[in-house]
Image 1 (cartoon, rainbow, N blue to C red):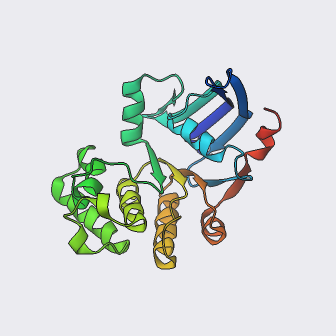
Image 2 (spheres, rainbow, N blue to C red):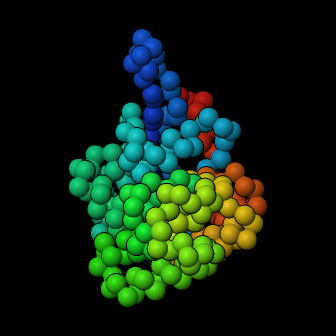
Length: 234
C-alpha cells in the first residue's frame, strides 16, 4: 500500500495587487495542484518569472495565496498552512517543514555551531548529541573549525549557505523545501549537498526544489513539475 503524501497543494492561486499602481493585479498562477509523497524530490520547472519561488513561499506560509490550500501532514493529520494560526505554523516549521535557501537569516551574534545545533535543541535533543551531529555536518561541508565559534554574518556567501544547509539537514524534517540550496557552492560542496538530499530521501523525506544547476537537478529529481502549465490559466 502506497504511503499518503506528506504535502498536498490544492487549487492554489496567487495574484499580487500593486496598491501603489492603482491596485493593478498581476496573476502568477491559478488552480495549481501538487502532491509529494515520502521519498520524492519534485523539482519545479519553468522559465524565470513563472512563479516557482512564489509557490515555494506560499507552501512555507510566507505568502498568503489568493485561493486554495496547502496541506502538510503534521502529527498524523493534515494542517492547512493557509488557514493555520501563527503558533501552528511556527510548530510545523519547527518539527515538520524545513526550508533551505541560498540566504542565511539569523541573529548576527550567535556562533555558527550554536546556530546549527538550535533545530535539535528546540526539539529536545540532548546537547552532546546535538553538538556531535552539528560538528559532523559542518565538517562534511568543509566549513573550517576556526569558524565554528564565530557568528556567520561576516562569512562569504558560500560559507553562509553551508551554515544554512547544515541547520536544515541536522534535523530529519519530514518535508523540505529547497530553494537554490547549491547556488553559491563549489563542485565539491555541491556533491556533499547532493549526498545529503539523497540520504534524506532514502529516509522518507518529501522535497520540493528549485535548482538552476542542471547536474544537481538531474542527480536529485524524482520528477519535474511544470509551474508554467498553471501560468497560462491565471
